[in-house]
Structures are given as C-alpha cells and as structure tokens.
Length: 321
Length: 290
Image (cartoon, rainbow over all chains, first blue to last red; front, top):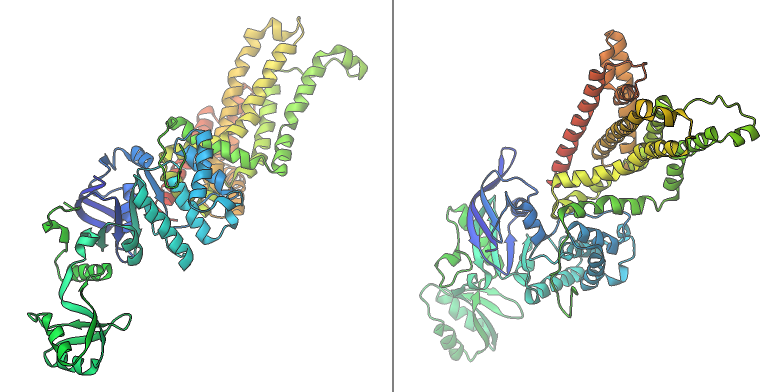
C-alpha cells in the first residue's frame, strides 16, 4: 500500500495543517492536489520525517513514519519545492555526493550520477558550476538527486513550479515516462491541475488540511447526461432558437462547437429532430465528460457544503478503499 | 546497473552502512576547501609552530650542530611546560584556521540544502556528526595529532643518558594523556563554536564575525563581570579562558585563574549551549522555518 493514514494530524504550533486524515491508497502515480495552504507539502514532509506528526499513524509502503523514518528515506526520492543545492559543486559532483549520502558506493554513485544527468537531459552541463545553471536546469538537478539512489517511491513537490512552457513540457514528459516505464511509484504534489491530469492516474484532493476527494482520475471523470458538445453546419440560428424554446442553454465551445445543456429528462434525440427540421448537419456530437478541473472545483464546493466527495467508494474495484 | 537503457532503471545494488554515509560530508567539504590556494597557505602557516618546534627538538639533541651554530647547550627542556606552550600556540592557530570553516552550515541554510540532507537516509544527529567531523578533523590535526607527533619524535630522538630515558615513566609518560585531553578540549570547543556561529546566520561573512565576536565578547564579559563582582569564577563564562585553564591543569602548571570545577563547568556549559542551538536550528531548517 503506497499510503496509509489513520487519524493523522500535523500541527504548526496551535494551527492544524492536516486534521484527522484517515485514508488508505494504492497507486502507481498519485497526484496530491489542492489550493495553496491545503496541506499537500505538509503531508509530504511529515511522511519523510521532516515534520513531526501531531497525532495518528502514517505508513508509506507499509513502513511506519514514526519508527522507520530512515528506512522510508532509503526507499523514497524527494524533489523539494524550493531551490536546494550545494554551492560550488558541479551537478555530477553534487549527485555523486547525494548518492553517497544514500549509501551508494563511491564508484556506483559516480557512474549513476552521470547516467541520471543524461537521463534528465543535463548531460551537456554536468561539469558546469551548479550556481550558474538556469532555474529550469536547477529543477532538473533536483529531480536527478531524487532519482540518484533508484527510489521505489518518488515524491515530487511542485515539479513544474516556475518553469517556462518548454521546460514544463519537458519535465512532464520525463515524469510521464517514469510513470509508464519504471517500477517506481510516483507522488506528485501540485496545485496545477493540468500537471496532475497529465502524469497521474489517481488523485487526492486536499483542502484546509482535509481530504475532500480521492480516487482514480478516469473513473472520477463521470459523464454528464445533460451537457452535450455539438459542431454544426447549416442554419444554426434557427436550430438554436428552436432549442432555446424547449429550455436548452447554449454556450460557445472550442473549435467552433457549441456546448448545449438540456433540461432534465430531455432526450438527446431532440437535437437530431430539430436538425432534420432545419436542414442542419450535426458534424460532431458527444456527451461531455467532467475534466479534473470540474472534479476539483466540485470537491471544494462539496466540502464547503459539508459533504466530502469520495467517488471511488462505491465503485466496483476502487483504487481508494 | 545503468540508470536507463532507453528508459528509467532503478538501482538494485548493495548499499553501504549508515556510518559510511555521513562520512561523505567531511570528504566532499575538504575536496572543495583544499582546492583554494589561500586555505592551503593558511593551513601551512598554522603548522609553522610545529615545524619550528620540530627543528628545536632536533637541534637540542644534536651537539655537533649546536657547536657549529655556537649555541650554548643550556637550551630549555622539552617537558610538560614545553608541550603546553605548543598547544596554547596551536589554540590560536586553530582560531585563525577556524575562519575558513565558518560557512559549513551557513551554505546549507542559504541554499536550503538541509532539506536535501534530511530527505536522505541520515538522521539529524548524523548530519550534525558529519558537520562536526568536518570542522573537528583539521582542528584536531593542528592540535592533538601534531602534539602527539612532537611527543613521539622526542621519545625517538632523545639521546641515551637523557632524562627522557632515565625518568620516562615517572616524569614524561603522563604528558601523552594530557596532550590528548587538552588538544581534544580545544578542538571540540572550537568546533562547536564554529558550527553554532555558522548556523546562526544566512550570510557567510556574518558567520565569521559572529564566531569572532562570541570569542572576544564572552572574554570581555567574563573579565568585566569577575572584576565587578570580585569573583574569579565568572571567568568561566569565557570559553577561551576556561579552555586555557583546563590546559594549565592538564600540565600541572600552577598559574590558574579558575578552579578546575569552574573551568570544566564553563567548557561543558559552552558545549551544551552550542549543541542545543545547533539542534534547534537544524530542526527548524529541516522544517523550512528560517
């Protein structure tokens, strides 16, 4: 099991950053999602033993966070959110040092430092002083140091923060490749929905220190029965006017399409009948599915209304139990 | 185990024991530190007293050379006072060399590197031990190692009818224990003070200034307090004074200003305060609380 929390709380002084969280989750690629201050980084740092827990139990890969901190850190590779490096070193020496700190023999650490740097795309700059590298390169060095000891679980804290579009795409490609091809489990902490959607299979949404939603992303993206996306050709105005008369609401969508929501109980057949009447061609038709953004916003809304959304709880084979 | 063979590969080899992990810290620091020419020159300068004393010991037993140089044979003995003098001198040499080491934790604080260390399989105490060893080793080389080397050389080169042979067990054997103890107290105290100064700031220059101000400031405070309150015990506030007096006790020289208890009390209090500050600062840095 990747993550098990049992009435787990973390406090900064008197303020609870994580409040009585209980969950059990297995995932190949888990995204920790939430607005700023939701408790994502706090959860990660507590799992690594950087922060003490206030109460409760936490396990990562079956290892107790309180008692087996060192063993956990042997298994886990952590890429911190902020700029962290040792000045005056080259990336290859920095990685070799980090490798030796993880217990790799010096020869193996050197060999692996070179290989990891090539893997993350820093092969050409591996002998340049680390202080002179760009922010995007620093970010990759941080990823490389997390990979140096071949962790079973890779925890990435805001891996695309502050990157330009190209560097971000590159970082997401790397993470995606690791999700697809490695046997490591990956936990990504981010407030960027697109990053989580691109790289992760499961998601854990946090808000104000509490879990407001969790589950498999694909299964959470439920189909909305009343919202459809259509692309039309012909006399669209009359078609729309007719639909408006029966209570449909229209909004322009992407690529010259229209998003049309029908009143409850209305069959989608009405679109085809109206189109036939006005000699309009329906070139594209599909029932709209929720995006991760919809799930996220809905989860936050539900939490404000007092109900927590765990869509997986009633699924046949849940990722979250 | 290649990290990637068209794709990502995890490490499946053997790992080394916990002790060898944090030993990488001093090793990598020295590799960087002794790349700088200024540091090497300063280190050589700090070894100058050792070389001079070595020459003196050689000259003292070499009658032909003494006659050649027209130096009288009544040169001062190589005894407990001689070795205490050497270590007192090396205390100040160590103080000077300490300034090259005042950024060992400051750099980690500036660049948030403590979080990286703590995310690796080492504990806070192992990080502390690694940093301590980084500072302690060169200082102990300047004090304990060199003093013991002078002692061993003296045993080796002393001519046959010399006191060193006649009364070795009675008059000279105990000096070795004192050398190690006094050298150890100097090295540990300076190491802890350097690390504490280093962890109190995120500016490399300030860490050196804090170290200097702590040494001089506490000495001034100790002197002033003891004079105002007419109590010599307050001199123990100064780590420098306490260490020097422990040296005097170690070598049975009678010019102490502090009692043995006060001297040890001052030194132990200094160690305790430094360790407390260090642990708190390292813990806070690991939690991103700067």
